[in-house]
Image (cartoon, rainbow, N blue to C red; front, side, top):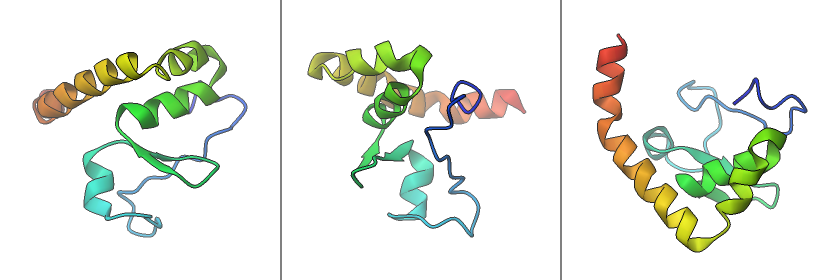
Length: 94
């Protein structure tokens, strides 16, 4: 995502780094993807991805589609399923 963010509109933060300030519990932030909007709202899961996509021009159409409740619900379901298999994928990647 950083490479796609050529205009550097997103401030990425590594919450695994102990010195990074976490607006909510660090373990919760590490369990799911989070984003904080310019308005200060903290989003998680598919909503956070959609907010990020809207800021990256090539991904903006996906982010705009995700503003639809049905699309966002489908993306959230897919993300939840991904989180269940993520540990296996991480083990396989090692």
